[in-house]
Amino acid sequence: MKNIKFIIIILLAGVILSCSEDYLNPIPSSGITSASYYKNADEVETALISIYDGIQGINSTSTQDLHAIQFEYYLTEMRSDNTRTKSQEGEAAQFEFYNVEANNGIVSNYYGSFFNVIMRANVVLDNLSVIDNADQLAAFEAEAKFLRAYAYFNLVRLFGDLPLIDSVITPLDKEIQFTRQPVSEIYSLIEGDLETAVAGLDNSYKTRASKAAAQALLAKVYLTHSKNYSAAQGLCEDIIGSGFSLMTNFNDVFYSERNDEIIFAIGFESGLTADSQNFSAEFLNGVGRTVGVNYVTQDAAAALDNFGGDRAMYSYRIDPFQVSQRQVTKYLPDGKDGGADGKTFEEGDPRLAGNDWIVLRYADVLLMHVEAIMAGAAETSSSNALTSFNEVRNRAGLDDDEDGTITVEELLLERRVELAFENQRLFDLIRLGQAETVLSQFSADNGLGYSSTDLLLPIPQREINLSQGLMSQNPGY
Image 1 (cartoon, rainbow, N blue to C red):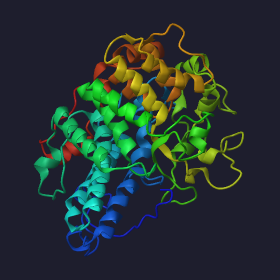
Image 2 (image 1 turned 90 degrees about the vertical axis):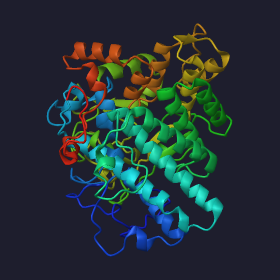
Image 3 (image 1 turned 45 degrees about the vertical axis):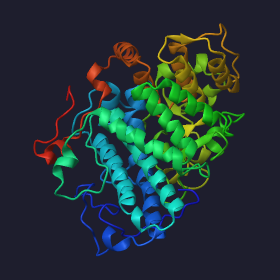
Image 4 (image 1 turned 90 degrees about the horizontal axis):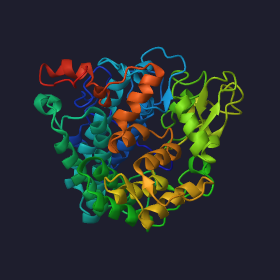
């Protein structure tokens, strides 16, 4: 990631993986293990940085490598009404048609990737005792717990009940590894981790954990699970008073990296196989691990055209060679348009792009502020909510809300056009109670196969098999 030199060493069983081994209990490939390596704060920090490396994922064409965040759009945007495949064929098309199978390799890859992130965080937390400086120990604990919470929050929203693994486990700990714990217990861990992160972090970083990032993530957790609206509102208002601001030009959010609007992003470095990313090339026609995925639906394009203001021109474009197709443009590799056919770049390789992936930004917080004030009601006329809502609209060249009342439907629409293709839409629909209505209608209109059980993904069949009867499957699979 940017400005962080990853120290790739064989630290322990778990940082260096063999594709044939369990990602939670890999076999060490040298004599160096966590027990013999971690002796001081510098050595623990190498493991802390490796957590970010795990979230980045491996920039390769192999489906056996753990791709982490680089595969997330399949499981989120392509299961909403925002995006689809170009060809409607292959494993990727299972997401848009709502017929995902338990042996889907993309699902398995994501599940394994983020449990690997959790394992890396646990390694750090299990070795904090070697740090003498109390302030440094507290900061490392806060950072590792933020990253563990981030990984678990992604997984629990996608898979439901999960194994709760809060320390380093051994190959003999099969019951811990494969017994699914209730969603409530997973959220209890997430909230506790984020409370520690809020208390122990400052706002020094944008591509590492920060206090504002922990506050924003905790606010979204409260809105999602416990419905602690007052606490979520307070967290959002703390961030609003912390010096963040919207960029004047919407396009600059994505191509002026680590700007004033960014709260937390996963950093990538262009031109370096170890630290670059491949997914933005996949949104084009003919490059990347695969081609023609995450294409914009007609429904999403219409929403942007009619309600997005100047965000539409920066969010999608017509495929120059296939005018019936629409491509995501928020993440054109390194900000270059790839030439008319999406293949020819002025310089470099689009598969080695350096675009940071934005996880949390200020516009999201402003709209969460509205949601927190709404507090589960159908609408709000709060002046504070209107101020936040209109700040986002005005940046897009739109007038203030006309009638002075924000409904749930208006909030969802504003989140859709502001955060389009940022892997938020599916979670927004579920959190605000509109998924069943919206996705059922979208499915019926487009001949898809949505049913209510599709809101959760299947537990990968590989995990079911390895559990030897300990792990149950989600309904409908």
